[in-house]
Each structure stands twice: as structure tokens, then as C-alpha cells.
Length: 174
Image (cartoon, rainbow, N blue to C red; front, side, top):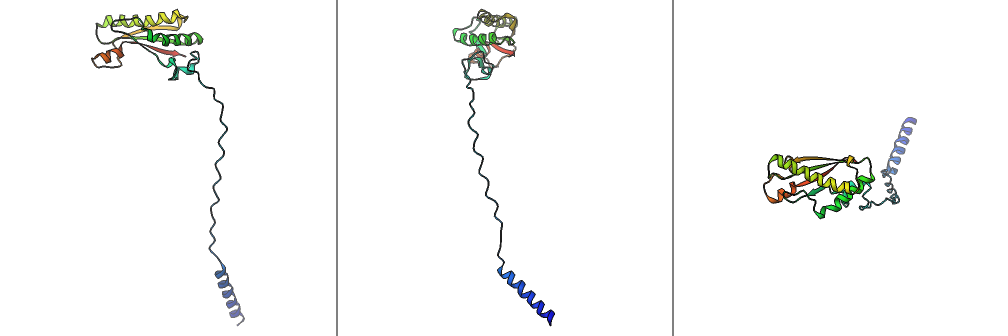
């Protein structure tokens, strides 16, 4: 009987504890607030008119990012609208003695292959003459003519031909 009494007390105690127990769910901790943003870093602004800064070669706001000089039909003289671009490149090349450029002369498809190679070379030489006149060392410049061999447009119309009559300024060392 003592065991029965103990057993009954134990069952009563278990029932009492079960009745008092509540459903305890742990709430996830509140997320930590995001860290405050870092203080603004003073970034040096890039001056697009600083033609001696190599970063301006890839800055679309700078004349240095423009590296194509266009020509009239059967002409090799540089038009006035392209002189500021050439002057900007001259300033850059003078300020960076390790800079090297290749001036690639191109033509449209009209004319013989030989004539177009000569015209492409004359166009490259015209740009070279302006660079040298502005103070660039001729040792930093190479002229190559591709004639009609590397068109940017392959259609046979005036808009396309205009885009092919060009000299491209290609930096081989910045």
C-alpha cells in the first residue's frame, strides 16, 4: 500500500506539473540593426580637361576618350573640328614619356587597293604631323595604313563610307 500511495502521489505530482506547464517557444533574437554607413570618403574628382591624367583615356567626358579622326572623301587634311582632339592627345603624350601610339589610317572601299593604302598612310601622317608640331616626339608615334582592309561598316553607301574614312589613335603604351 505504501508503494501504491507513492505511485499515486507521483502520478498526481506529474499531472500537476503537466497542468502548470505552458508552451514555451523561444523567439529568435531581434536582428541586429545594420551598421551605420561609413563616412563619405573624399574622392578626388577627375578633371576631364586634365589631358595629362591617364585616367582620362577611359573617361567618356574627356577628349582623350575620342580616338578617331574622320576625313572627307579622297582627302588627307585634318578638319578643324578634330584639332582639339589631336591637341588633347598631344598634351597627354608629352606629359607621359612612356606613352606610345600607332596611327592607323583607313579608307573606304572606293579606289584601288594600292591607292587606298597610300591614302590611309597620308591620313595617318597628317595626324602625326599635327602631333609633332604640338611637341610630341616622333619616336612615340608609328603610322600604319590599312587602306580599305579594316572597315567599321561594310555597306556601300555614303554614311558607311564616311565612317570608314578615318585615322584611329591606338595607344600601345600608356
